Length: 339
Image (cartoon, rainbow, N blue to C red; front, side, top):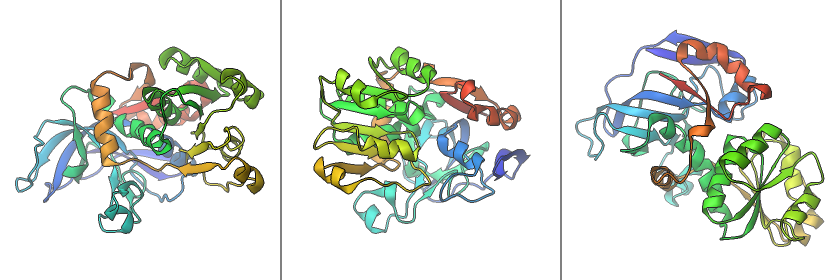
């Protein structure tokens, strides 16, 4: 079967590998339809992804069709069902898992990161990690995992209707935070330095408050929010300087949510942190409940995803096209591999 392997930083190869064996108890053999290209994949290609080893089959944003099920496994899923894949393989036994925090399992294995992922025609996955939809297309199901990141972060923040909030960074993860913050009823501003991304959030997500990250962010935010700063700031930049700056942009008693993961040190002045009685929150991955909720949300049509899908390629051309997707001038919002 066709398989794309990241042999080492900067070196993707299309090759042939043996297909998986028939699924065992609790497993499903699935045919990969679409693979979303994530910042994790881009960081791995650059050699900058934490907790990553080579060679690796990338791909954890998956829209699949069930090809075979273990006949002894009880499930309401059927061969031919289209599903999103929850790519977080948790142990089920550690303290985090026992408390329902499976997204931060101490033994977590993420498809395409810690173990081989979905850039191949067929893959075997646990049945419990499949989230079926009878109405969504495969490319939208491949976006479910990305959207879950933003949905989970917004839940962590506990946003309330009309609450002033800022999302820093309008890449794919930032967009998901914007989408779910708006669905929560928050008054959302977005800060960016890229004019194309600023235009995208305005035209496609209905964001009115645009903050130019190249200017005086605090002054712009106070102008937007009636002289005050936002109560919640989400940082989705993956940039250490931005993450540290975010702590200066919240109102007294506010919260900062770090969505992005950065391979760097984060520091801040403690007196200022205490003066504001800041709440600092990290947000990692998502839960099974997040996946179910995001699928239901997409089925209602609450988020228009068509404009997000800006680039795509089959396996035969992905290897050549992939490096170009890292360049800002390519204006990638979301790129996708299709089998």
